[in-house]
Image (tube, rainbow, N blue to C red; front, top):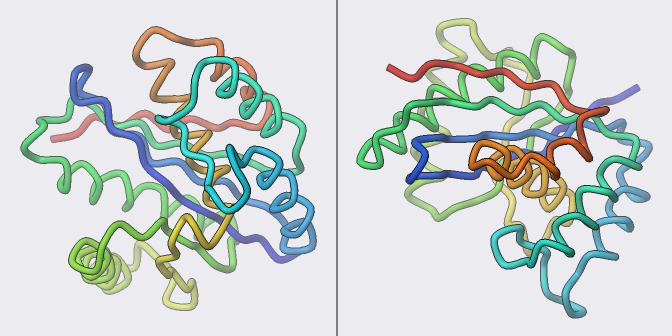
Length: 187
């Protein structure tokens, strides 16, 4: 088996929660999972994005995730100072990449945010590697969500966890069979 992981985030500034979620899958399943994600496109050529969907579409998306051959891992950081979101991201990314590397994932794809933020991620990942927290052989690259439907799966997991943190647990319950949660206290 060759495991791949796709990562996205969700931030609840009102509740002080930062969620970084990964969906890991065997590379042999990537096309079938990608095809399943494409069924969620609101219109051809448009990506699925949790925050833009109504509750019925969110439930349907969580149901799709529950039926796929994926493992979901979510790092839930709190409390988040809205002025320190990048710090929260770094702390959650450290835990998530350590866990994915320890589990034998062979490649990680992070949703690209913008060139400055992506460069900042790359710099912090290099520091994690120098401290031995992320294997040197684990490639971590940024990909645009519009170009990779597998990132939508991570968006759904992050959205479901974030919604549950905001007192809407139904979505998290739908994906609970495939989910590992790692709550951390942010300093």
